[in-house]
View 1: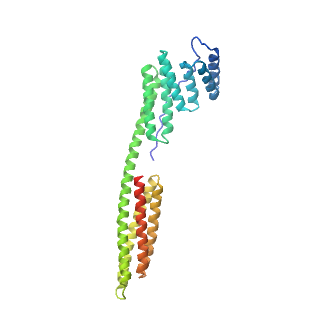
View 2 (view 1 turned 180 degrees about the vertical axis):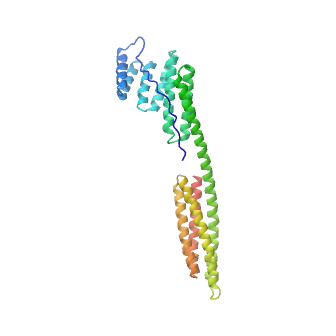
View 3 (view 1 turned 30 degrees about the horizontal axis):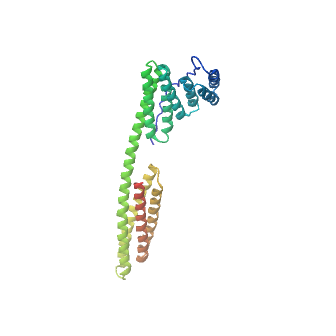
Length: 307
C-alpha cells in the first residue's frame, strides 16, 4: 500500500469584513458584526446563521459572501465553502475589487485542497483532479495579487501533492496490470490441471473396467503417483491464488475460486488413497469430482477477471 504524504498548506485567510459603504439595511451591518463576534468566539454555526441573514439583505455584497464562506470552511463544509467563495469572487469582479477577488480565489484554492485531502482516502483519481483544481485557484489568486505570498506557497504545495498522487495512480495501475497478468497465468494453470485431472479420471475408469490379478497393483501404483503429481501442482496453484488474493481486495468470485480449488485438492487426495488401495472405481469418482471443482474454480476466476 502506497501512502500519501500530506503537504500542509499555509494559513487560511480570514478577513472578516463589515459591509462597506452605504448600507440600505442597517440590520445587515448589525448581523455581520454579530457574525464576526461569533466567529471570533469560535461559534461558527451562529456566525454562519448571521451571515446568511445578512446576505438576504445584501445579496450583492462580496464581503458578506466571503464571511459566509469562511464560516462554512471552519465547519469543514468545503464543498459549500468553495461555491460561496466562488460567488464572492464573482461579486468582487463585478465591483472591480481585485484584492477581495484574489483573497476569495485563494480561499477557493484552500477549500479545493481540503476536498482533495479527503478524496485521497477514497478516490485518488478524483483527488488528483481536485489538487489540479486547487492549483488553478491559487494561480489565479497570484495573478490578481502577486504580493499574496501565501497563494504562491500553497500553489507549490498543491502541485507537489498532485504530482505525488499522479505517481501513486501510476504505481497502482502497474500493480493492477501485474495482478491481472498473474491471474491470467493462474487461469491457464487451472485449465491445464483440469485437463490433466480429467485424463487421469479416464485412465482410472479404464483401469476399473479392465482390472486383472496380474500387474494390477503396479498400474494402480503408477496412476497413484501421477495423481500425486497433479495434486502437488494444484497445491502450488492454490498458493499462488491465495497470495494474489492477499495482495489485492479479494472479490467474492476469487473467494469462491479458492474454495473450489480447496475441494478439488481434497478429492485428489482421496483419489490417490483409493489408487494406492487398488480401488480404481472409487478413484475415478473422486477424480471426476476434482476435475469439476477445478473447472468451477476456473469459471469463477474468469468471472473475476471480467469484472
